[in-house]
Length: 92
Picture 1 (tube, one colour):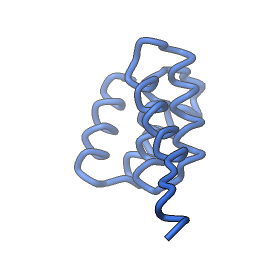
Picture 2 (cartoon, one colour):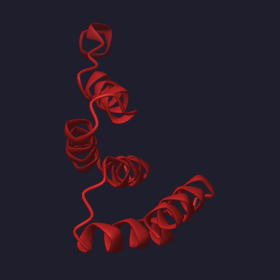
Picture 3 (spheres, rainbow, N blue to C red):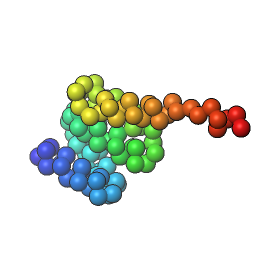
């Protein structure tokens, strides 16, 4: 059942149905399912909403559960975006 929910949540997210995808992911997490891919999807959902702290939190949790999964790269990407500093923007 979990694999079906994961696939459906991912398909909904890819189709732009963020709220529906989040409902499926949250329901699976509420059932106590500690699956790295659920946290990865939750991180992607937060990213779509520009919730960077929520995205980082979920990607980090996913990376803890599966260090070789895609969340490690996603976490690094978010950190690079947040740490971006362009000196010319602040010193005209």
